[in-house]
Length: 156
Image 1: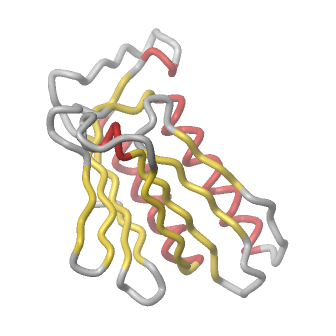
Image 2: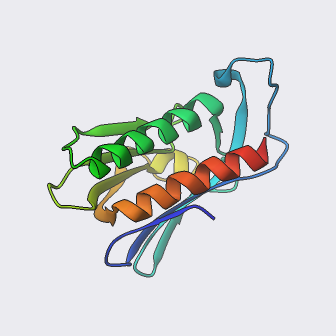
């Protein structure tokens, strides 16, 4: 279960691939045409924000590979002691957006998660996004990236 937990341990982001009827994969097709159902949630203290089951969220393979590539880039930059510029990762279907920023601290990464409420609640709430800004360790981001990669390999 790939999970990014804050340094303080009170905020987390989870992303899992699911085998549902919305799974579309054909290795001969372009990554953008392959869709993997997901479950994602953000837990802040005692509150959890997850997508409504009615939404049936999916990410295409291009989005997933792009996210992995950007996470790897941040991990490698931090390991080399470099400062990295703001990195943004969005989903085509407006489930969430992730921003990674460099807080100029060794082994620490700024993590901002924006959750699109209209999509998350299947239209019950709309007109705004819910955002959380927290800090994660380099090790946590690296582990999350490896777990997503491993899950993807096993899934396909």
